[in-house]
Length: 338
Image (cartoon, rainbow, N blue to C red):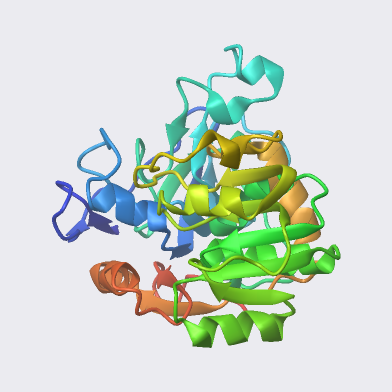
């Protein structure tokens, strides 16, 4: 099979013809149709996340079709089923975190496209317990970005509780998806972009945001919660200053630059800062139930598998018009719909 392989961080991926994997116990062999490109892929490729499996096939927003079923697979999967394969690939099910419904914090967890091979390939294997059935409303390209930007964004969003005035710092893939849920649920949305990015600010106002401005501005009223999707540490104290009493700042990324010091007065009055790590299967089930009801719409830009480096370069440079999605299957067999 063809695959794009990372031999060493900070080097381009290499197109290789490698042996097709075989499913082991509890695994599905999946013929991959699409794989969306995530900012976490950039962190892995650019060497900002430690100790990746090397050589590595990146990618963790995978849409594909079950081709072979390994032993001990639950009856909910059959040959030909469409499945989504997310970032969280495996947990031990035995540790204190797994036994307390916090499997996203499992110390032995494995991650797709980071500690095990991912979706920049024509085939992949995945633990069936961590695969999702996907809503029929979406075709293979549309649904791919929901498998990380959507899932991690949703977990970040749920950590804000019932906050009415919600701020989003950074308006990339995750924020665009979660903004749609927030508006669907009647939240007042305040969006912070790069200073001077008038085009994005106008587009989010058209989407339904109550206010949009630069990240160097204060909103017209205090926020009950803020989610930081940009990996920029200085946004944390900026968001704290925009919070009402008892508000929460949720850091929604796996990697962030250092957070500068700030006066205790900005945290006082029971304001909270929290991070989001990975996701749970329950997050995925809830998200894929609500997504088609909104319905969440994705913006995508497609690339053939062999142009994965181009997609990553354009993402790194901020030159994408939507989420980059790799068409990983061949034209006659990848099953794209819509």
